[in-house]
Image 1 (cartoon, rainbow, N blue to C red):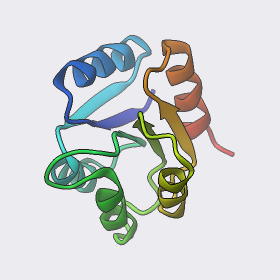
Image 2: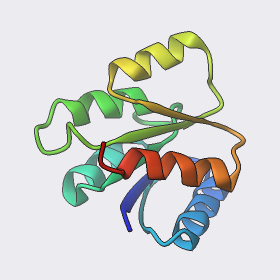
Image 3: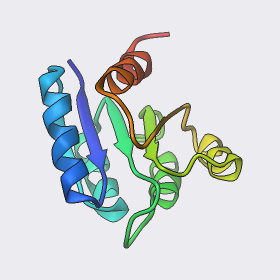
Length: 122
């Protein structure tokens, strides 16, 4: 299965995501904010990045801008996990290469479907 980096500042949601992703058979790395996510993505080069949008220290969009600027991380697929579903937020994230959005709250079935679509070859 895939190595998935989960970036989220909410400890309970992070723990739930780790549990769900491992139950789906994935290897999981975690980061608690965008700055840590940037470091982990650069070091581990995951198959998929699952990130929150609003976080302390460095938010999701800023982290993605920095990841997209590095050749070794620019093509990592990203799923934005967020309660923000407005068109402005989606447009900004889309401009940073986010193709999939998973609104909070989500179901395990939705999570699994988004992951399969994101990591499957086109």
